[in-house]
Amino acid sequence: MSYKHIEVTPISGMIGAEIHGVDITQAAIAPDVIDEIRHAFLENLVVFFRDQDLDDDALVGFGRKFGELAALPPHRQVPGSYPEILVVEKQPEDNMVFGWEWHSDTSHLETPSLGSILCAKIVPECGGDTLFANQYAAYDALSDGMKRMLGDLTAIHANGRILRTLSEKEMPPPGTESESAVWSEMWMEHPVVRTHPETRRKALYVNEMHTERFKDMSVEESQPLLQFLYAHAARPEFTCRFHWEAGSVAFWDNRCATHLALNDYAGHHRLMRRVQVKGDRPV
Image (cartoon, rainbow, N blue to C red; front, side, top):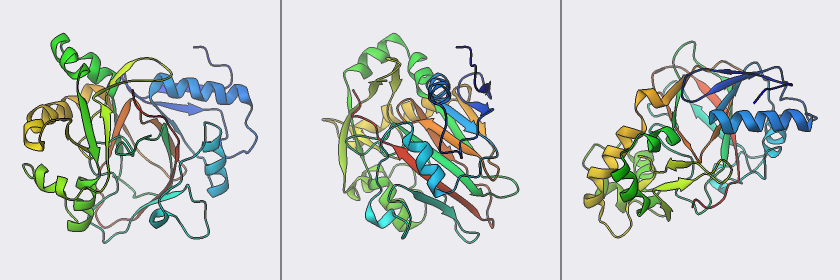
């Protein structure tokens, strides 16, 4: 596509692009500009903006230009703010970071989010980057035999690994996936390979943070294949790395991309705010 209103600069050969030439803090953004941002988003899976001082009103307003926003559970809402805004914060004394493993946001829900919009408020001088991985590419790189097998599989996504990690304040050691499953309070079935509702492309749809097992299999039986898929999905050639600055904004597609927040800034403060655009049930 030839862009008339914005400048789109890819940051890697597989995923991610920076968008320049638009002020997304403004309430009135021309429909033609929004259409081009949406096209860049679908084409690059994640788009980034620099030097955007988004307050809560502007963050919510920008998110709503792409669809209805998903409300957070009451325990995650910020008093006096919008119920759709999630505060992502790491204090200098904290050991864990939010988004510590490869994942697609809220895949344990019946209708995971279409996309997430994250705005940086306070960032460390160095460190705190986010990695993104192209799950179209992950699927395309599989053998024909693996694609046929995965096409018939359904995965159970749950929140046990998250709840266990938050309680124990450290990532569960490898080989204890069955113990993590005991913590689960929410479950949902999704196809292992999903078809993007807009591009119609197929993408691998499992992730280490949420996927518990395959349907009709035990956690132990599922692990060998799941662990292969997790490693395959995060191959370096499928990824990009984004360095945050105050005022940076990222908008990623949870239907075909996964991401991971790096925990390499011990002793420093990082503050972000996020909204999510409602999606539909994966098929």
